[in-house]
Length: 87
Image (cartoon, rainbow, N blue to C red; front, top):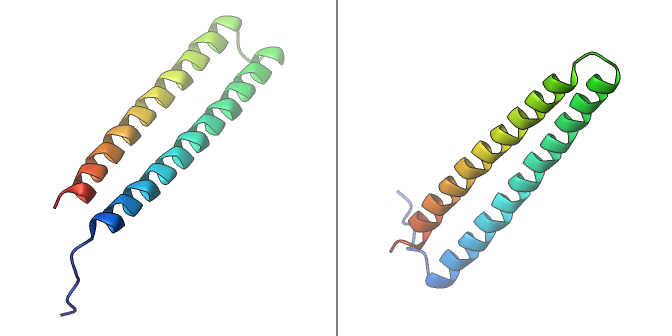
């Protein structure tokens, strides 16, 4: 076995910063995914592949899914932060 020293307060704070940075990175990537999905939906409506009602329905679904994923991400990040800061 390799002995692993306990984390110092400074190291814990550094890990929380890294977690925060990663969380924001994933939020941005999800927003980019939403932007791309909405652009495809709008293009499909312009090409008359879907109706205006479908465009609105799909756009709302994309937004709802994004909100759900961001909520899960934030809940996970909060739980991990608590784990990291716990002595």
